[in-house]
Length: 220
Image 1 (cartoon, one colour):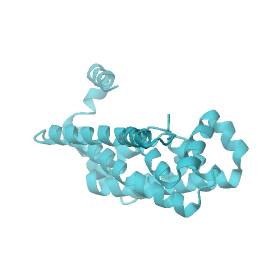
Image 2: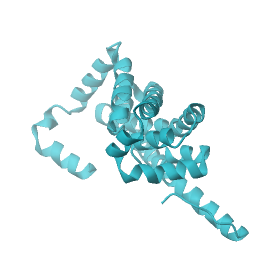
Image 3: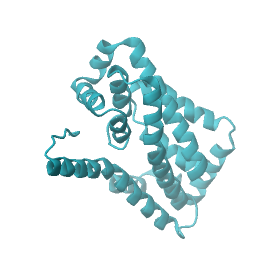
């Protein structure tokens, strides 16, 4: 994807609009709009229940608002979007959600019901559709307080890393490159580690269960 994007930008008229000066001016203009953070959070709330991927919004928040404020806005947006999705599923019932998401909902729902709070936390690190996890928790009978706490714990580190990564890339495009590539590399390593964390935890738990002679169910 990165290579394709690079070739597209090098061979199309977009390259004239994505110079360091042009990108810097665009980001600066967006930062000066007072309602920009509210618009970003509102988009999360509107699009999360519809199943729209959240990654573009997260990257946009980091690029526009930077690592610190961007992480805060992204966290608030995804958290509120998750709550709205949860309440949406509770209000409209199982038939509509199953029609939208199909058999994948039942699989995630079983994992949440079997492993509880920490399973819901771990699912925030797995590249599953955001709405899928929210709907599975709602229809699986997870209480609102438990859902909110698990969502906050699971989203915080991922939002920080994704936002930092986006801010580092924006810095590479709009400013000098001194130290920016190092920051982007560190963020990429952090994202890989966070993505692999549920698998590593599952392996350790399976090994411990096998050593103790106990069965262990894991997310496939």
